[in-house]
Each structure stands twice: as structure tokens, then as C-alpha cells.
Length: 139
Image (cartoon, rainbow, N blue to C red; front, side, top):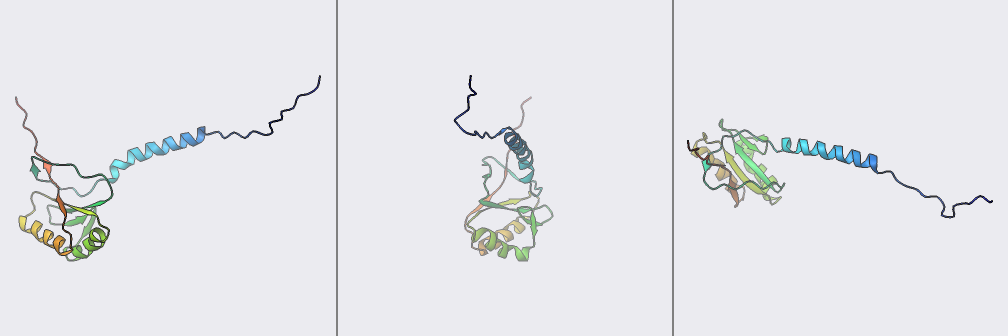
């Protein structure tokens, strides 16, 4: 009897199991850290009946006014004097949507001053963020 040889040549197989394992670990890491990256400035928002949630894309910026009157663009603190320039660069030129979050304890006059700076920066579309009214539980 003769020895049979394989005429197919060399067959290279790639073991994808380690690759899949690494991808699953990375997926879990991103799933755990993604909610932590969306946190911003702590603001006690006023409540209203009709509220829509903010879009979850990166095509918007949130301008927050804390109860101490500090102004933040997303989580970065901005001085009132610098606000118009930052808004022109970050919102108007990049064609992003701007949302305003103001603590319910901030004076109305302070909110109007900030809105004036927003208008002076050439931003015509502004979303205002609020929380839904909590329903009273019946006993």
C-alpha cells in the first residue's frame, strides 16, 4: 500500500475565539462606562407637565446655570464675559442645538441675561430643559 498525500495543499484556519472574547470584554466595559460619561452639572430643574427627553446624540450642547449662578457649557465652567464667544465657536459654527438648564432657584433676571447672550451669539433655536411634574400618590 502506498502513502496517500493530500493534494489540497496547506489550509490555514484562524481561531476567532480569543478575538470574540476580547470584543465581549470591551463591549461590557463600554456598556458600564457610557452612562457615567453623560453626567453634567447638578441642577435642580423646575417641573412642568409636558417634557420631552433630550436627544442622546452629540449634535447638541447643554448650557447649565447652577443655583450659585455659575454657567457651564456641558460640564465646563464658562465666565459670563466669555459666553458669547464660546457659543459662537461651539454652537453656531458647528450648527449644533443648544439646550438651557437653569436651577429653579436662579433668579429670572439671570436666566434672561444668559438668554440675551445666546441671542447675541446668533443662536435662534434654544431648547429649555425641565423635569416632569411628579404625580401625587393616592392613599
